[in-house]
Image 1 (cartoon, rainbow, N blue to C red):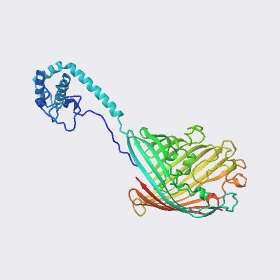
Image 2: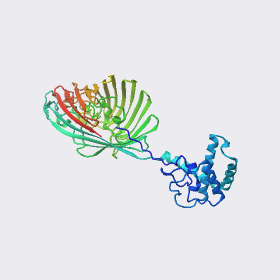
Image 3: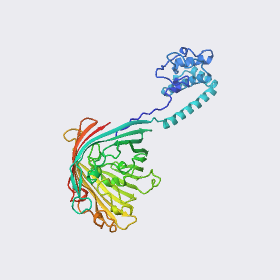
Image 4: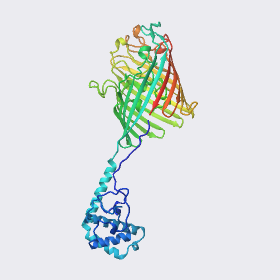
Length: 527
């Protein structure tokens, strides 16, 4: 997302006000010109000695500005206060000459005139000075508090054509014999995201994200969520608010974000994976980031980003999934809190270390991909879980056009109403090739294992991996393998096309399931 341009409207008096404007209530327009003789000011009546004296001072020292039409605004005679303003301008001009040269720059006779005028108009000068000080105080206040709200629109449209093979699936009972058939599908859908970025002071953001789409997740038709795409959408052509958050910096190098939508670890932690981005990066959902960062599928809360030093920063967040619902609230039954320490030990290495704690009201921890359900469906509402998650991501730019990296994650979930616990792991190795074949292009290779239950020691009958055969303790019998390759071709500053291939071996961590093959062609337009 680009930087919002800053437009500041400040109310201020011109720099030459004290010695160049005879009429204090009028602010000069750009066409105003300097004149050096009071006699040219046709609406000033030269009827007394004070005018004659001031006329001589102006002609000798040049200290009053008028207007090209030779009138003051309002076409009226000068009051004593207006005259005092002109005299004050000449006093300032004389003082400038003394400071720049010496007292000899002012003849002795003029000193006598200045002193006499100062005595006669002492009351008006005092009042004028008070008014000037008041105006200056008000101006400083306005300059500090004045702002112009600036809003810019950013958008991204993703259109995708994707197709899968027909697969045999060992779903239920899980006995090594496939009894379901996943559909061979070719779909064509879209995901549209609009972001209104508003700045009130130039150092803050109010982000309003609007999203719609019609590309539903393919998990129900494939009997697995491991083929999910990063740009799928459950909006069903309805416009939803995906982000409503305010971000500001109360201290140098310390930013805060808060809001009822779009505040979660995904949007708070700094991205380490160079292939992240559902419109410009990896095609799959698993390829976006370490899935533990998505635990809880939360949306509303508060977080911060602290730049500790040039090579270290810390992000932290608290986020609730049902903050808007009266039966849950901000501190309700489903929430996640966590932190990431982001490090750059060298100019070519980035590291992110994560810890998260997530509370769920049921047997689902919601990483978005892989094993999400921890309880047998026959005991689904038996317990909520408290999950501790640990992870890390590293990216190393080996050469300017080649970056390699990896991530890993481990979770330990304890049931609050049951004995025992459940552990999961996930990992990914990736390689990024920026500017491959042409500037702006990107190639990517990814190999990894989606989240997998490696151990489950809940009471018999409640463990998920073996739920179809009695729900005894134990982990998944096999491991899935995610293989992804894509190439993004940049067709211009705003348009890119990305073909890619996704292969899942042993979907659902079950070697009895056929290999899932999915081809994708994504077109992205950004504005």
